Every structure is written in structure tokens, then in C-alpha cells.
Image (cartoon, rainbow, N blue to C red; front, side, top):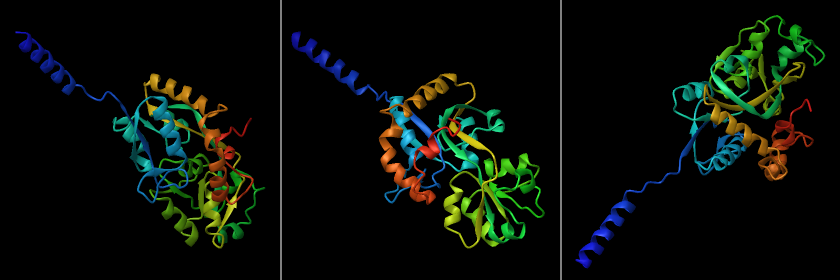
Length: 273
């Protein structure tokens, strides 16, 4: 009888163990991995870049496993709305239009608005940084181009100019180079695009705006918004992620922007402070 009882206990224990499941939850993060050094696929086919570092740190903060869902920028919000992903961490700028569709966290990145301009058009129109932004967007034959659902199309629209929409940044830059389009509005990253195409482009710094980027979260999920805000505060702490990666990314950012004076702080610190 004792042997039977022990065997029964062992059997119950075995069944209990086999029925246990890994309770670790997965955080599904959408980002567009086409923008090195901020988010891209490395030589080993792994997601890499600043946004990936932030996503990894947030998943760790949430005590969750990270799953990055590579998503075209124009489909980031739809992926969030349908529940395909939990959050967007993809240098998404905060705009009133997007606020109608998603909730945003506190900012974790900042960017000055700059325009990449076709060189011939820049010279023909006598464009300079002193030109008023309203005058700039009122120029004859101005033809903006940009990525759908980004500031590259929304900023021209604010000034009454419709921009041609594309889904690949490379296509937009090619059109600027050839003159099919002549203005691409973007953030500091267009500086690198200019240096890669100096013979065909110029930069216009006369747009007096800064934009902040934040995590995008499905509307109504205030708990996740609160957790994201708490996490973002830790990024700026003395032992936070930004200080941990500062030396590495100071080099990466300065190389990318072709300016030794511009490092990680240039894109993560609030320019109004």
C-alpha cells in the first residue's frame, strides 16, 4: 500500500511539472528597420541600433521577452490598432494627427527639422537659412516628397503644400537628386543624406521647429503609458541607458551626422532646456 501511495504521489508530481508553462510574457515592439544607425538589421541578421537598445531596455524593465516586429513606417499605427504589436518604438514624432489614433508616452528623443533641397533648385530660388519658412514653402514650383505618415509630408501640408508620398526613403532621396522632387523635410538625419549627395543637394535650416519622439501605445492603455513614462525617466538617470551607451553612440552619431560636436545628447536631450 505504501509503495502504491508513493507511486501515486510521484505520478501527480510528474503530471504537475509537465503541465507547467513558461509564464514569461512577450513584448511585441514595432519598428521600421531601415534607418541605420538608429534601427536596422545587422550583418548577422539581427535588429540593431539605438531604437533597438531602447526597446531591449524597456522589455527588461517590464520583465518581458522582446520581440521586434519589423514594420514599414506607414503601417506602424495600423499594427498597433489591430493588436499585432503592443507598442511602437521607432522614432515616431508626436503630432496632433497621430494623437487622434494613439496615445503617446513622454518624449525620449528630440530632433530639429531640416529640409534636404535639390541643389539646382536651391541655387535657382536663392534659398538661404535666412529665408522665412513661409516664403520657403511658397516658392515657385516647390515639389516636396516624403514618407507617408511622417513629418516629411505633414510639415509641407501645414504650409499649404501637398507632398508626394513614397514608402522608401531611398526613393525620396533619388527624386531629390534627379530634381523630380526638390524638397525632403526631415530631422537631423537628412544631414547625412546631404553629405552622401553633396553634388546634388543642399540643406535648409530655416524651419523653426523641433519635434519630440515618443512611444506610441494603443489608445486607452493607460497602464502601459504610465509604465513607459516611468521607464523613460530612468533613461536620463546617472546610471540610465543613455549614460551607459553614451561613449559608443557619441562616436556613431557624430560619424553619421559628419560633425564631431554632435553626439548622443544632440538627439536625446530636450533642446529647449
